[in-house]
Length: 65
Picture: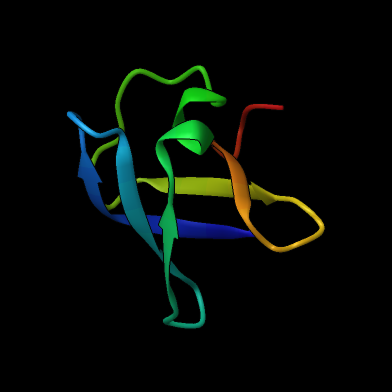
């Protein structure tokens, strides 16, 4: 799934994403750490990978594998 970064805290490496349907979704530091990214900016489009339970496990840019 994809969404737009609504918040991102560089200190905790956590944030929220606004999905295309208007739902706000939180992502944990572990999901950001798994991305290999160093920073996210507000309004940036990201892809969210999740596990079978629906928990976000990785955030990446839509153009990255």
